[in-house]
Length: 133
View 1 (spheres, rainbow, N blue to C red):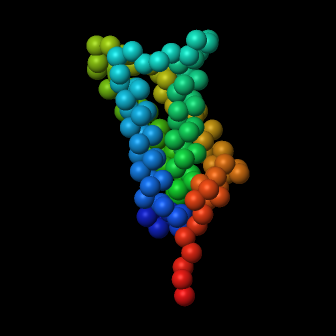
View 2: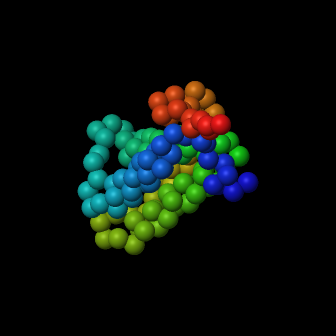
């Protein structure tokens, strides 16, 4: 099944899809900026990675049906690996294996949450498109 065929008939899909890509842009920006905001708790950086990728995965699971979720998860994890590699090439950020592990954990958490009631929040807010006869 192609990704286009797996999308939910969500009212305003283009808007919600644009929001999803906007969230990806925010993650890219925060990941590559010289001094990102820090959480003042132990392992705050890793919790930020976990939460950010869980949010991305949950958002995308609301846009696409279950058969596409594994591809979305792989793509988001690959994004995390790519960002860590780019961070290793910059003078102001560093490559960290634990960040990648936190990204993967976030994707798995989002994947799991995508199988719960969280997967239908957008459908409840925006509604599904109805076909007219």
